[in-house]
Image (tube, rainbow, N blue to C red; front, side, top):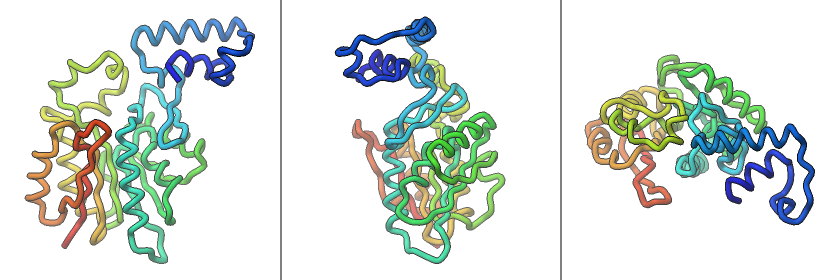
Length: 262
């Protein structure tokens, strides 16, 4: 469906085919809402914020201007995490997973929904508003995730997790002024990552071995042209080794999969 169809079917609570084949009754309130929504979209506000929701991994997520809108590329990260969970050796205890910078909760909630094994998921974010929305999304999708406020690893226990996943901010300061008008509606805290865009990725890679169990995994989403400097960082890391690089739908190196040794 195009954006107009998505907007109308959502507001009128009808099917796409009904827009063309049936005579629909539109209330004054609905007309007002449609007009307001069109004006907001003409100002290039993302449709997801206008509707207050989006789809990710076949699930519905509430979104607001306090959280980054989930992207299709991040579904690749979730798919890679699910593969690893499936292949990890089963034990009497649930596998422990950590989602750093959870935002809307889309990664943690999708893993909780689709994991083939019993897992316990902790999801952290520095934003109170994001965590409140993530909790709402977990309830909406009927899954259990432990959400709490933390600046990355600050409140976490060492040697706890079988798998750490993160889609951190990875845009550089120089990129921010050149973003499309749509992206500027999203929270800056979810976008900007220092001069080179690597601030949070560096922190995660350096600290992750302290929080991963032996032979645990780290999966990261990265930005365009960031693989080379990150590969150098991994090569100088005594404990983490890259075992896979996964490209996105545009053939861009997007996901790093690393494993802890030693």
